[in-house]
Length: 428
Figure 1 (tube, one colour):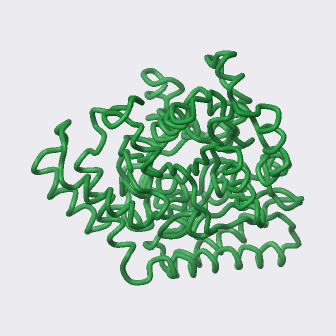
Figure 2 (cartoon, helix red, strand yellow; figure 1 turned 60 degrees about the horizontal axis):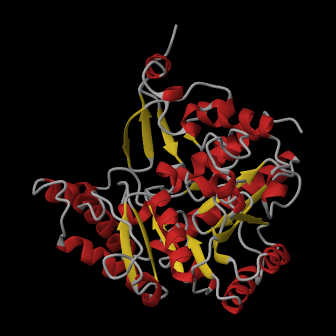
Figure 3 (cartoon, one colour; figure 1 turned 120 degrees about the vertical axis):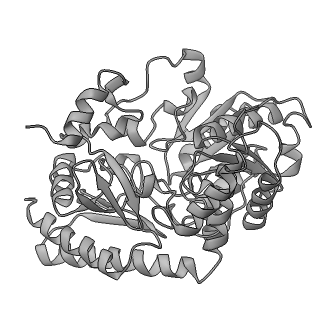
């Protein structure tokens, strides 16, 4: 007999490719059918079969306040009643732009778009137009959305599904995409030297979040900043995940680095589709209508998304929000490490602020190659066990987990207990 979620998935496959609108949602890598969510409130989500879960995915990061926060839902209602879209200018998009510029000293001007992918694609085009160069450098395992250039040796769902690239990417596109190794500055230097005067940009997740959470090594980002400045290369930080997550001003605040362009998304939309890219005035003014580089979007600056994002950022500025998030995340990390010690297991945990990953690897995970040593069969066993214990984690070894302000002490304790009981079932 099928569950309600199982029936929905069977039905979905008749109308949607693979039955899902984003590949990881199919749960293929964990060998089971996906669950279908009917509602969420605070730290909890509920599926179509009436099961309750503590949610550590948080819509892949945006829901830093938890689900259906009262102030956010009230603000959405207030704005939506006046109209959901105009395709014209509104005051609230200026307010959110001001807030972003205040939080990110590296951003003089910011352009709103509708997704993180749109932000990164536009940032690369801007860097190419600004420098007059064609090539750019990305890092193995970093995922910057599904733009053609970014799917070469990407992370996230591409990595989860074991796809090294994607059909549909032209040889010319691949030729202009140069690959370096995260936390290895010599690999970047090598590409810059081999392509002297041809590299428009280096794009990087300053904390990798799409091969699992992998923080930068000491001085790596500083060395990258110096190298790009010396070679007049635009440095792009993809902070779609880390932006307003690891610190109010993102990873660049945490590590004291000032990129030329920053890409944002997720939290700045308060749970709505959103993206943004911003940076130095001299670069951003090359965008139309100020300059010749074209980019546009009917729903860019959508008033409902702008309102939800602005209210989220306002709430985060209150009541020591980031100290609270750090306390919750630190407790979770330390207690999971204690669980592994008690059970005689030697997997590894990585954390940056309120995002973290438990890697089923026996060595420290510092880059794409070390992430690839993870035992995904162990992860599959762990995922299914956690789900049975009422904890929803990302259905992929190569994704981040998140805590929100809605997670209370009881939630954290339940996650820790479920972690212990689930790890007991994993034989090394």
